[in-house]
Image (cartoon, rainbow over all chains, first blue to last red; front, side, top):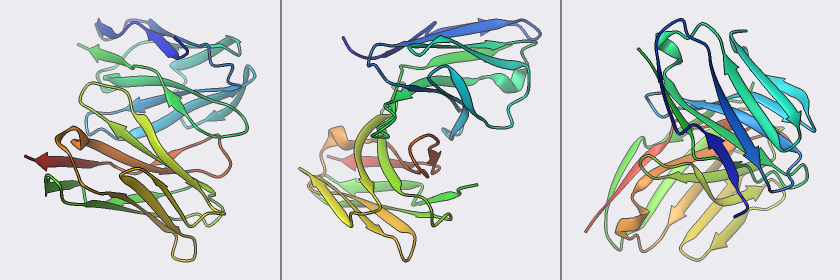
Length: 112
Length: 111
């Protein structure tokens, strides 16, 4: 299946821990994103990479560090997790020319 | 940055009736306007999009209109069905890299 996939689907962890979320797309898209959806369902962009290069960093705390080893993968590492980090994190991708952003299935992060 | 406002926040319609969701945007340079549907526990799915050089676009029961002068765009769903129940998000972007989303509209279709 051609798609955006991410793992894990659920992540439950204690405050202060470090965790990572992985994302892969096999659509051949050049641009990948991380979005955060909070408890009120609001969707906000966190980062965007184009061909492995960071192009958008939206005032996200530096505890969040994205890494793009190649243009098909974009991972998100979070240090020193806080209660307020609890949310659903969506990876997404789009081709450079059309702008149709497609989302992965989401990772529900719960920080206890 | 771009600010997108979306109304109403909730919408309840009788099956078969039409539903209309309206969004306004702040940056006149925005040129791409997609709409997403998100069912409970699922990912946002792109249902229709429009670019600033087009005033209206239709896909079966869904249509989107854009008024660049007034900086607003709308989603119209006709002949609503129970499976149309979901949260709908509008978004706007300058170029294709950074979508700014509205706060979402929860649509409930009553059978």
